[in-house]
Image 1 (cartoon, rainbow, N blue to C red):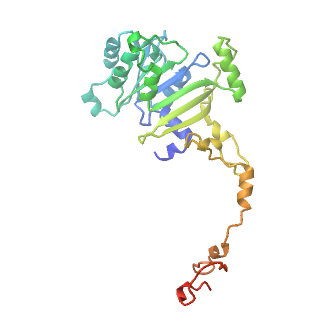
Image 2 (cartoon, rainbow, N blue to C red):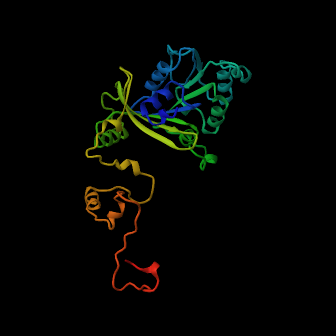
Image 3 (tube, rainbow, N blue to C red):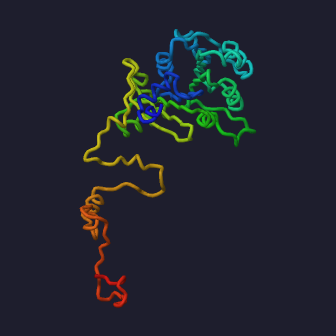
Length: 299
């Protein structure tokens, strides 16, 4: 369990296999990349005994991995009743070792005032809720909820694990160019290719959030951490390690490292460890001491 927090690939596979302590998994996609590739990976990594309840707002046909297929409706109460009819009762779940996965293919259709109640009623130790949110889909806000958090803000706050899917780009310039084209609704070819970028945010019980970026390939089912692919020369420190820790700069340049190595610290002979501890003192003529006191004799 402890090793998964230090190995990004193991942590991601534990989240996809529903073995991490995450009763609610949020998948965020956009018009540039669909999040259904994550659903396929979860269905592949999950145990065969897992019961999958698929709630459809956009999907017409029942997926092969789904055990139950529930049609979505705007009424949160009716939707909750339909989902709970396929789930065990709280008394039965205490004595059952089976896992249940509730998949919502588009949580945008659920109003922000009802999404919190729906999540709290469904998510439990034996039931995992996985929902896809389309971040580029405009949200209708009631005037009386003007100062209320948006649905995405509420979902981000409640989800212990967040998976954000993006098209894979080679560098930052290509990513910015792609975002600019998507804002103009210019759809380039290959957006939903087998290779995509996945950003995992996992919150621990202590409140600490771990964020990793992966290059994923849905054909071979590989997840390569992007930060592990980058190599640093001469033991160069990664500047991202210190981002967000303080309001000032903690990075050290090559010039500062060279100047630090050239500093001649005083009294290094007292730190040679060849003999016992010693106090090295250089007496100066201006020092005031009592000649009759033997304890103040500098020599």
